[in-house]
Length: 122
Image 1: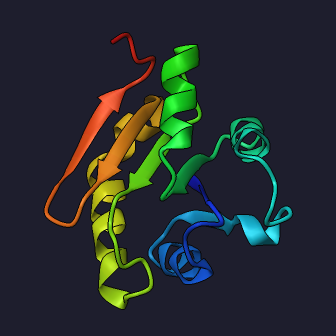
Image 2: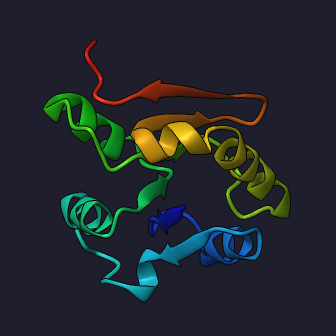
């Protein structure tokens, strides 16, 4: 699975996910730090990558357009700089890989993760 880690998450997350078997890029390797969410979203869609982000904007874009992709992994963890936080998204990616490949939004919280398949109809 190909992943694009948004600028609001540290590059160390992209390196960690790469070391754990995912083809992963951090936006800082691809584009400018002040690029719009729409540009990031467009790159992810054209490269068949799921967006890993701390931003709720990507999920809102999918909901508003009833889009089928790209998939979004929304990390809702406060301390994104701690080494421990990386385990939650890794576990979610491993647990929901099939759904993410098909098109989904995965919300990752410290104690649990949940998935909604795309397109969002409600």
